[in-house]
Image (cartoon, rainbow, N blue to C red; front, side, top):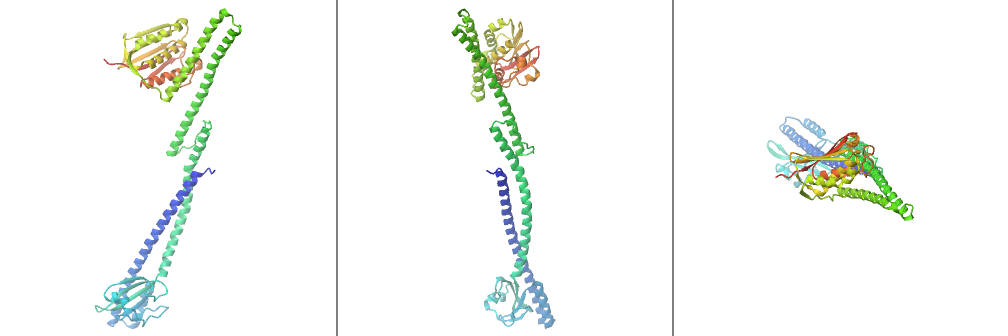
Length: 470
């Protein structure tokens, strides 16, 4: 299959357009010039006929002799390249210009051929003039007026063959000019078609590479036009796909690791209990470990399902009015055991005992759970967790702050990304979905969330919610 189909289509279609345009223009110019040429020739012949009439008047009154008359007549004849007849009222040709060819003197014309001229009208015809010529001629006939009376007719016959040769020569010149224009057009169209088709061809190849999983493919087109914009958009898309693929690989690796570790532990402990390796008196302790690992697996799967819902758009909010302070108290109570185990101090400060906000209560509880879980997870032994709310401009500001290990500035730029895990500073537990889910929930409420952190000194997450107005 040809790889230059677009180039061929552009090239052929443009050439066809040029050919059609040149053909139409050539035809129009040919007809226009032909009409102009014949009209101009008729005008000249009519003017010369009037000149001949004036010379005849001079001859009639004796101002010039016969030799002078013939001389003047032949000058006019050579000037317009035509045969001239002088015809009387009866249609008899009694004088003609001196030209090589048939002698017409003494030949009579029919009454129909001179009737309209004797009535004072001029005649212009194309053809063989009643079969008297063996080639087409342009005939001009005018009344012969002597002393104010019509005494006959003056006919002038110019061969059309010579005029057609002139027109054809001009038309050939037009065709040659059109041919040169067409050759130049070939070059320019070939160049422009290549400029248009080449980046699209590169983009097609890049798309095929992306379809095969090579997300590093890029299009090198930097022109400031629509194709350039398309190339930039493609490169942005490819970059995002590449990043997504990297995150997907990391996620698969992380999930595989996270699932493999508890599954290996669970399998080992259960096998040990069943085959007697683990004494019966210690079986309960190991079953508790198994229970803990299964719950960790369940949380991981829940996070993954929640992320899937967020990205599929199946994330309706059920907004209600509730006391955010009470929700915070309940969230802290759920972590009581872990707080005690780590010997943490939890300080809760509210501006008012009750503060009613408008939001999806279950989703905000999920946000609080994730943020408090992180604060506990990354706090040092005997650390302090500070949770407080403030009211500013009809907004509730909820902050969960710890004095734990902190987050580096580099990691702060990515903590909201899905699958992202700041391994060095934030531990290796989980799949890196908690903060991503938190961010999406707050964004769904059209509210804001941000982080303030310093390595070794702790982290504070703050988010806003609308307050009910009374």
